[in-house]
Length: 130
Image 1 (cartoon, rainbow, N blue to C red):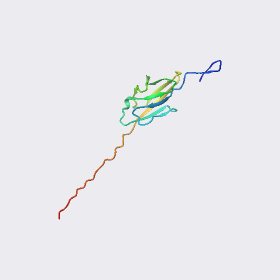
Image 2 (cartoon, helix red, strand yellow):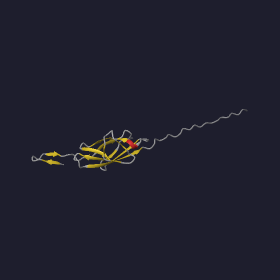
Image 3 (tube, rainbow, N blue to C red):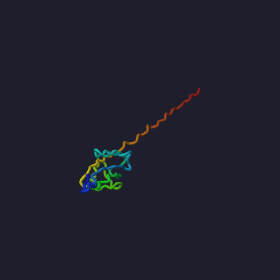
Image 4 (cartoon, rainbow, N blue to C red):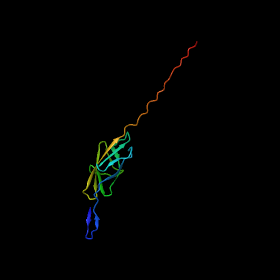
């Protein structure tokens, strides 16, 4: 997509990509799963994490001009959101008209396995005198 001038040279128009390329939390257990076809991002955070105020680190495609949640501009490593339920990011491309919704779902890892209790068997030895 671009425009062609009288010499046949194509000038690139404003970009229309509205992608989230990377996404993470300091509290996550492994890499985020980014599905660019479905527009979804799944992240697991460590057990005990308060998901009501998480701050994400993310990058978007070079042609993106804004990223918002509920009309609020998002700044990587700064803006916090409540991930108690899925959060929808709206990324706007450089062309100003292309937008894309990205749904981020955060799950909390199960509690760590508790090792089995160690039991000791005690025996009482009685000696009889003969």
